Amino acid sequence: MKIDLHTHTNASDGSLTPTELVETAAREGVDVLAITDHDTVAALSEASVAAQRLGVRLIKGVELSTFWKGISIHIAGLNINDEHPELLSALLRQQTSRLERAKRIGEKLDKALGCGNSFEAAALKAGTSEIGRPHFAHYLVEHGFVKSHQAAFKKYLGAGKLGDIKDVWLTMEEVINVIKTSGGMAVLAHPALYKLTHTQRKHLIGDFKLAGGDALEVVTVQAADLTHSMAQLCEEFDLLASQGTDYHGLTTPWITLGHLPALPKMCRPVWASWNIAC
Ligand code: AMP
Ligand code: MN
Ligand code: MN
Ligand code: MN
Image (cartoon, rainbow, N blue to C red):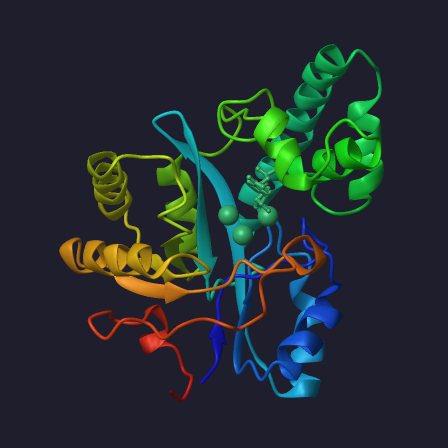
């Protein structure tokens, strides 16, 4: 079984439409696909139609932005009811926050660059998608302010830089609560990615577990020693394990949808209680 539980469409910062993403999954032989766009479930109804047509098992998901002790973190909700009113109202709050944050990023960028339309340019790039820092990165590259997407994050948008505004999101407890209220499982996304010491990471995972978190994303596109270390943390904190590529289409050309190493044997998969044959 090929299982990829972390992917993005152009409803957030991915490049593919929901249908194109599901078609890519089918082509790559993915059996189970979760779409986890940033703070939106807008892709899911179109994706469901394509998934049914192509025989891909679609898991409804979302990736919510929050923060913990001053660092931005992401929590995925998997197997959610995407029509649950409490989830929809939480998403609306997150989406309003995204827009406000983008305006603040735009103001700061305008000052730093000495020109006056970063927000408008990023909003144009986003179109009807949920606006995010990658839309600013596209603008910065296109106008020659930086050479690459990575450089845009390194200089302006990444952790500790002017685009790193984190006081806008629902709290970690609120995010986990709303995922669980809507019937989903809460997964700490890419836990090895956050710039934390081992002790701090354990503290984060302890708080995540205490707040009702279900699983760590143990397997993602990362070095094998990190996967091993995340698997150990799963065991230590009695959490389930998830796996996903964090595929974004064209902006992550080094990632192949569904292409992941196996979940370490010691892990209990987050999907074990779902109705999928594996
Ligand atoms: P946002 O949702 O606006 O906070 O933007 C976060 C998104 O930006 C992530 O989901 C990635 O797609 C992208 N991103 C974050 N850090 C980097 C980085 N260092 N280089 C390239 N893209 C990044
Ligand atoms: Mn993203
Ligand atoms: Mn993420
Ligand atoms: Mn993601």
